[in-house]
Length: 218
Image (cartoon, rainbow, N blue to C red; front, side):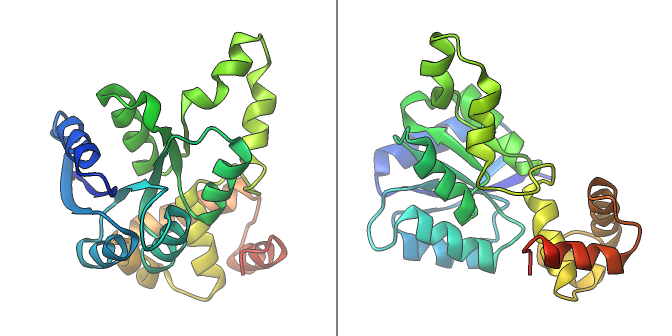
């Protein structure tokens, strides 16, 4: 199954460059382009992309607002934030808004972009290497930097998709209802649920729901 991608950037040349890089991978399919936040949300509703490349600085609605809205209406999607930002605290806010990965516009190339898309499409997070360049050059230990980037996200051992599923389960949704939201089979959702229960050490749905409530998922 190909990865359906929506590109959101107010600059035409950047959108064209992203399309050119994406088309180098036969497993990717560009399903739409938007040049502002409102158009991005509308296209996300219509096309239901699995990955959204989202410029953070845009007219009408900024990237953080768009990420929050798309995460609500399309919980199965994965957002890759694109920006020239290097402030880790600001970038952490973007992850808190619902993005799954961050890639600096200053270092985008086909290989880097494909790595980021593959990572978030698989339900993992992606951090642009440029965030750690200065510290690595100075011989710093990268572990504390990763911890800093992850502090926005409790229960970091769960993937974004697992957290969304946990939240929906805690809200009383069935495997079938969740599967319909994600466009996946009941068995796939059941497998995710098993993985979640194993990771958080719960042996029953009742325990899992209590865990979700105690952890602030509902």
